[in-house]
Image (cartoon, rainbow, N blue to C red; front, side):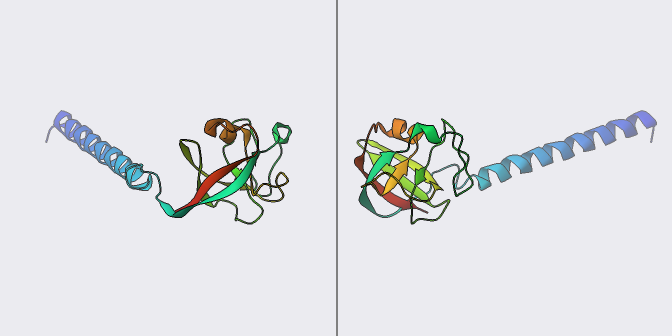
Length: 136
């Protein structure tokens, strides 16, 4: 076989291998994103509890869950649920998937503390009754 033909065959084989690797990476990313990127389903009935926004002064602090609070942090504080527990939280016509990012005490009379970014997303300015449910 001539050297030019051999080089072309090697180049075509390398191109085919590269296409296969890219295809596997795309397929794997879609599979790992959880059923085509769908959100996890809600588990059980809606529950209701008081929630209040956390103080903006906590920005920059690191929670007991190891999360550094930023202005964009979306999460919930709860003295009982474990760090990372996934929850749906709703208020008015909005429902948001979030997780427990802090433990410990929250505002007096509230079950949950919600980050300012999550409060803004839900349209909450002060202590209110929210609906919540576990997520799978």
